[in-house]
Image (cartoon, rainbow, N blue to C red; front, side, top):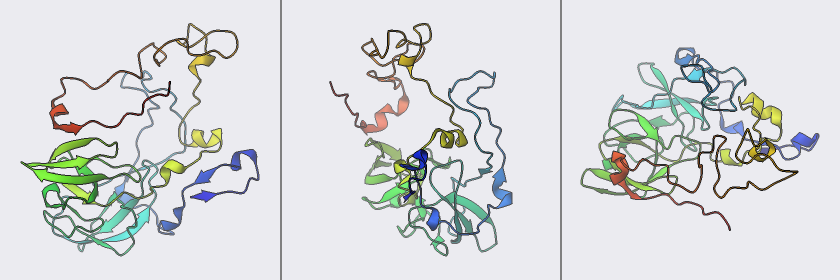
Length: 280
């Protein structure tokens, strides 16, 4: 982490990620960029479905190869780059025929390293292979839920899943949340923990930095009027006045299970994630 001298009140506790591991002078590959329309939390009807979003710096989306389905052809890491759309870093890899693509960069991956996707490969950082061929105890990321669909799990900064065991066509994985679940072992996964594991230690420091990220101000429910929120009203600072935490519309947001009981994949969960209990 990088900290700063307290030259201003906002700088006193502000921290940023140390970007010294990124390739200096590397510019994003133009052929792998595209512009996404900023919808500011609105759905197809133009109505806000996710509050507190809007503004922020302009950015371009890097097209990540989540499938990595070019098998048995080694690729060389050309650069490690920052991606404004995700928390981990990304790596530009180049194949012998000069084709290039972006992948999620594992922790400690360096320029010049060679990575390969194959049904069976050496269990080394950055390589990608079928789950059934990965030894138990290994850390994996960018895991396919459905073979051939591309990685969907363990894709954020510093995250990984641990391979527990293989049995009857499934691989048991311990997820970052602590949940243990079965995943079809024909799916692919990449070896290693993802880069930028210190992302969760970043201290924003000031309101303006949140605005750069496209996050708009959030007002506490207890600071509102009764007409605006279940926690609103009262003279001065008041407790929430209701037993369970609720959102602005009165829906319970904590203390009840939100998973659909009829969800078909429930049978694949061997152990539910650990839930932190509120102190009474």
